Length: 232
Image 1 (spheres, rainbow, N blue to C red):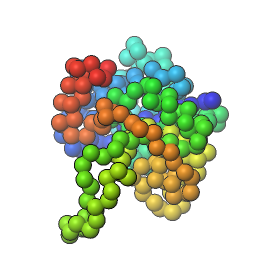
Image 2: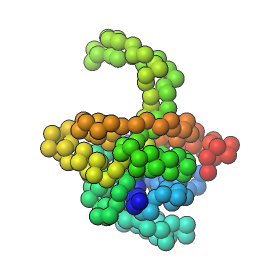
Image 3: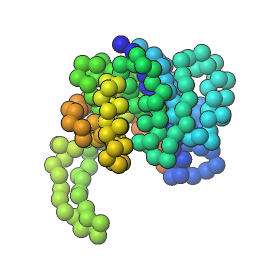
Image 4: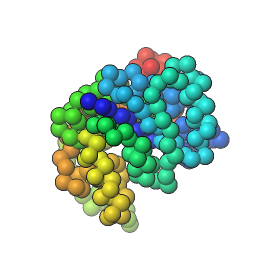
């Protein structure tokens, strides 16, 4: 099967602060986006990567990858992102080859997902059609109104923190994003669009180390994971 990963790294990373774009932020000396690319090129299943970055960062991203001895010879293409994550993913889908069968969509800010988990997701998506990963929530979750009144407390054993990659057969994810455009729906993740078109989505248990770099404290955690040998 032909498998392509779309890695979305077009966000501004405002919550991290600083002058360096989140994609280029060094994690223990290696830019964040390169660490994420390392993971996907270490898999057995991913044949090609489409990296979606902000339009203003296309040239810098190209130079970064071309000058990296580990990645320069790999099959990758760049695509300019949109105003939202959903639009960035949709632009990534436009770059898929016609013979692509499976699409893995991943946040560029999750640099520690294991290559074995990526491969498992691809295998399950080929069998089932649509797969997400997540971990059970540890805390009690409250549903709260805009006025901050508690409205409900869902059963914790039914709640999962969803991660990426989310992996789909090509025809499913393309149809879902086209439906989202027609309905003017802005989803919080790609699986939400797939759910809305009536396609069942299967959950695989993810990894606690598959963290997303969002705030400065996440950088400290990421570097601690590297020091402890729990990530590489």
